[in-house]
Image 1 (tube, rainbow, N blue to C red):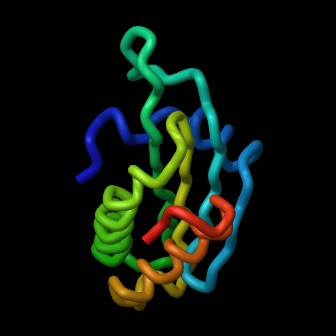
Image 2 (cartoon, rainbow, N blue to C red; image 1 turned 120 degrees about the vertical axis):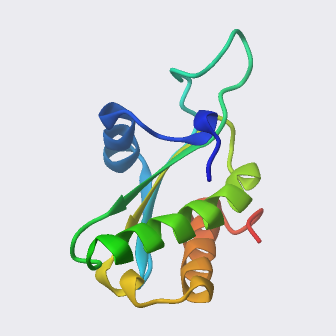
Length: 125
């Protein structure tokens, strides 16, 4: 589970990451990254806002049980990689139809490759 301060919840944050961020596509997922956001509804005082992540898993991935499984796997994978993201980053991970039948290892491989591409090749497992 992602901590509350690391979750994208507002529609506007999702839209900002998707429309104004950079994108890296892989066979199982697409990752959108918007670096250096300064507005954070959870920020307290002058501290740097944390990186936040959100997930989009449509019905094309599968039924409700399959979609929830994919979301849980992606949340777990992103939680372990949040420390590699710049402070204030917005990340949206969109699962593609193949993600419903993919295993945890394949999702991790695609997520790592997409983040490496977006972050310039360093810092991700």
